[in-house]
Image (tube, rainbow over all chains, first blue to last red; front, side, top):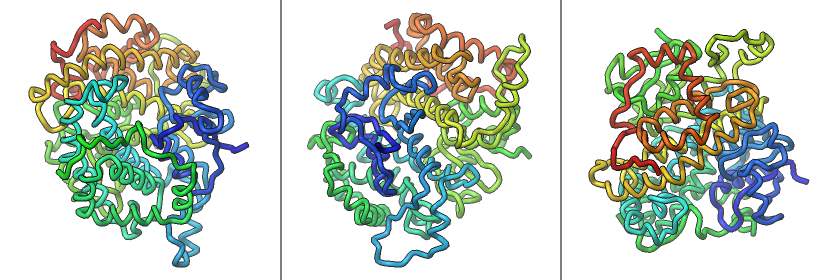
Length: 263
Length: 263
């Protein structure tokens, strides 16, 4: 049995994908419960009838991570929790060059509260997840539980705003931070799970807004380079080619031709 | 000079209020920069031309906390950062009863990664901030930078959904967690900054949706009791009566009669 159990809807990458990428990149064994046991594994967590409910708050929503007796919710929080427990260094290089051993050693300690980078990584991830939420709202701007078809007019307006204003604003911030960093990653000290999160965001944006991203991404060459670098990192590449990587579908990143556009 | 500098728009409680309440409740000195220096203090942080820009990522948005050389962004992240550094115990009691000394001592250590409650507090806070974001979207559902007046139709739909579906769903989760806890706070181990965040959320909801909250809140008696308890805690009471507590205005929580309703 894997130490970590991940609970999330099967059939879409969704918010759990940010967690999966980190577990995969660090070769941390995990069980994707809905894939092994079916979607019924989700309900007990949000209804409060889960094992461990007496010592853990009831999550508002999935993804949920179960680590023995501890049950953790909220995507960014799960990533932070894992980073404080996983000591495997994140290796997002293509394997062409030898790593400096001192650097490698420094990166192999779990995240600590004494290190400001722990909080910088969390802030960058929360910002990436903020745009992820805004992308969700491009097809569900007025009602989370209703169909896209019932809010198409507002969706068009929201998607126009996200494409024209929000995507450039967020991408400019990521580009600025990559430009400040000498490592090629968001933080000068080296790769973190925030880089994986940025990869996933860009990947989803390319799926949902192909015309817009084709025009926009070249304006942010460091973001594009990070995307390509992460995509080619051996562990990520193997994961993306495996059947554990689920296809985009009716989740956060959806392709509706009428919501895309060059501008 | 205070150790902590808080950077946020003057004139609204906004997202910084979650941070202010925690600083106030722990009697931690801080300087609210926009109040002392004016709004111009904000721009360098988001443009990247701030002191410390060479060693800290450029924030996407305020609130920002400056702690010496360290610059931290994202509301939930700032709270977590502070919780790992502030050792003053959170006292949200009215002062009527003697505290158990052992309990008091346990609460006086800063948050640690070894304690799952650190992550539970973060998850609860992130969930509270999720509804805070949805409330923002009730008046700005399709475009962050446009006027409410230019998106009134979608705003009406979004507000209807938040009032009818989202507020009860979130409040039910908070009520469930308060019911599971023996402490009267969200976590059985005692008060945390998540309780302050829930107070602020309920307070804002009462301002923005008075008719809805008058009808809805009695269905969640433990949430209402926590709200009243926090409001009467001596340090919070003194803060709320001071001129440091800014009035609701054109921020996240706004009152538009047409967006409120009993249902």
